[in-house]
Length: 98
Image 1: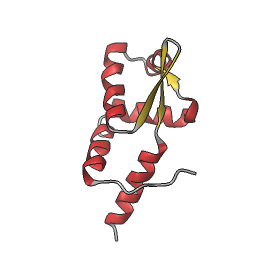
Image 2: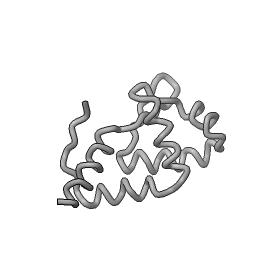
Image 3: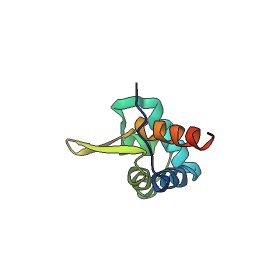
Image 4: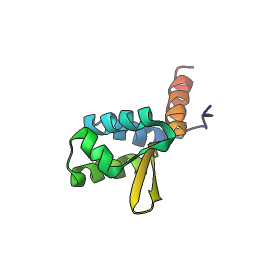
């Protein structure tokens, strides 16, 4: 289970902004479905049918917003969803409603 940490307004805005673009939202959903094992950039590009240069831009945006992680496995970069950030966004929204 992922524990939601308090999220600052600036971090929430950055995360929502990153997800407000259709390709990045689709990309996040793909990685969230894969779980902790993640996917390589090549597999992501193939599954989404997107050019590697365009994909790199979107991946960087999601990494900077804390929504996905990037790790190296040999010569490949592996990307995975960061569920703690989404849990933090949920808590942030729930706290706004109080």
